[in-house]
Length: 200
Image 1 (cartoon, rainbow, N blue to C red):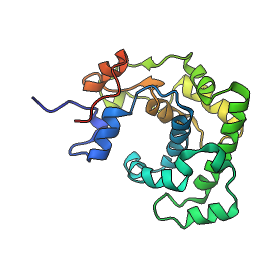
Image 2 (tube, rainbow, N blue to C red):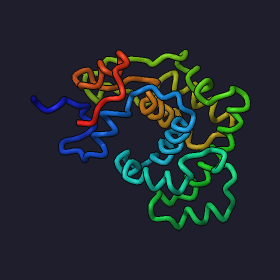
Image 3 (cartoon, rainbow, N blue to C red):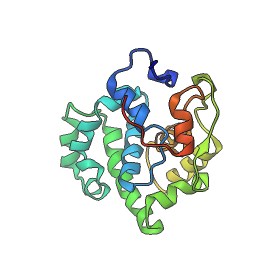
Image 4 (cartoon, rainbow, N blue to C red):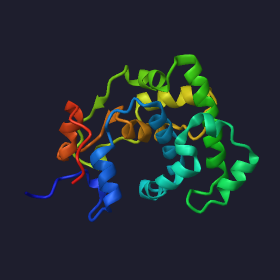
């Protein structure tokens, strides 16, 4: 069997963690509120950094942030923030750490209003994934009208690190948009709902 063709952003000689993320998670529709919250926080953390950097610290984030339990994070105090800022396992950026606490509180407010974050966030694509046909990374947009609308609403609600570019990356991660390159073995699988994939 020949080697699987993947999206070019995985890079030549990409590490197993990146390949597994691409093959099993990226672009797969997510409707679990905890996972949606995890990606909301991680995509905000990524701002100005590479996804590889964040992916390498993902397990540390899960430990430091109570497995991304928004109710637990919403209760974080100044002492908790100080503890996190001394934790070498995460990105020690005060604005990003504080934003995670703020976003947890706002996340809970959305739950109260909509019953689930899933019901709220998927309204921006009318509850369905948007399947693009892109041949290369250069054809993938940084934002979209949907991510701009999402950003406006999140910011209005008080969410931090919720610009349209971050929102678009979030949409890609949780399968609201399928931006796998058409030559990638995951493009059609994600489009037709054949997921999760088996790791290579």
